[in-house]
Image: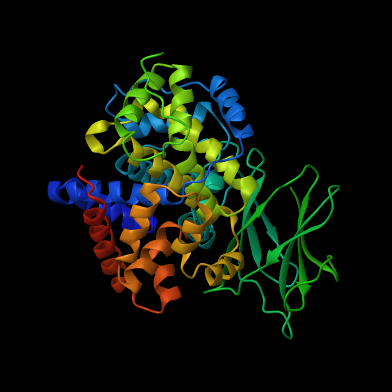
Amino acid sequence: MDAISAPDRARFERHLAGCAECAREITSLREATARLAAAAAVPPPPALKARVMAAAAATRQRPPAAEPEAAARGWRARGWRAGTWRPRTWPGRRGRLALAAGALATAAVAAAAVVFGLSNGSMHDQLTRAQASSQQVAAVLTARDATMMTGAVKGGGTVTIVMSHARRELVFTAADLHALPGARGYQLWLIGPAGDRAVSMLPPGRHGMTGPVIAAGLRPGDHLALTAAPPGGTPYPAGPMMLDVVL
Amino acid sequence: MTAINRPGPGKGPLPGTGGDLAACLRLVARGDADAFDAVYDLVVPSVFGIVRRVVRDPAQSEEVTQEVLLEVWRNASTFDPGRGSATAWVMMLAHRRAIDRVRSVQKESERERRAAAADVPFDEVAEAVESSLERERVRRCLRSLTGLQRESVTLAYYGGYTYDQVASLLGVPPGTVKTRMRDALIRLRDCLGVTS
């Protein structure tokens, strides 16, 4: 049902690998689950078919599986079709892919830390936590064009940004942000020629760490900015910029 | 490829087409566009239906449906009949992609608002669908579940929630949800007469 979280799924799949009985039960339950989709059946707009057929004609197919290491092939496949394509097959393979994604994300963070001369342990931990928190975060961190930036926040604290231009997304985390006076909080913005867009209010920090927060829909020339805002935020960036990073 | 036995327009997408679908997928794996055309017709109502149930937004549902069909096209060679039916494979891809979409795109607040509307989704499902034997059967089987079982299954499957989210929505411990969900699926399986 895809209702289990990634770590649970990994544990579960390790268990399944050693339990034929369970695997049989899962297969039969999966068949039952598929029938639930039938109960929701509804025809799509007719125009969709032409689009799908055209897209298929322009999409290379995966060759039949001959190599044993499906996970590695999956990653190569992902590589040559950069973008949002994520090859998926059965859960076992997916599980390995997920694990591979996790490993890769960690490797990407470690590599970025080396490249950018960051020996800062907390930043590393922060990003490791970030990659664990969601697939979207992991997708940005593992993007082939992922770049990492850091910046200092006026009043205290540092931010770490990992950005993928290809995905037009970035992952924002912050460490040691100072509490703002009153009920004010930090509001994250994308500011640029395409207009000023509020990303979100930053969630309250935990153990000095804030985020990760995803900012999607990056446009050329955007800056990432922080303002001090009343609860709920402001519709336009108001007051002094606490942070301004050119993306 | 004229050997493909295409379903008539009035025929439901499931069941009875499982064998045809597996045969079509083998041809699709070799790049047979006609077979893919047939696969599209066989699966798209169920794929679009479940995607729309989970994703809700019509435009995004079309996008995800297209992604699912392209995934079928691209990965047809990886379909392994030894691990389940072709229908189950496609529906799993569809459900998974739909869930990926809502989990990555939807902000928590929107999901919470949606939860309020997710009360008895299977009735809503039933309303939206033209009458079909399969739908009636699934509906009857859903009705045979206990309230908590049904809510757990519908929130998890049609709502795209995790066990933990279902548990907090229903105000019961996660362990209870897992047990109820498993009981519910076993009951559904037996009620639907799933054999594989």
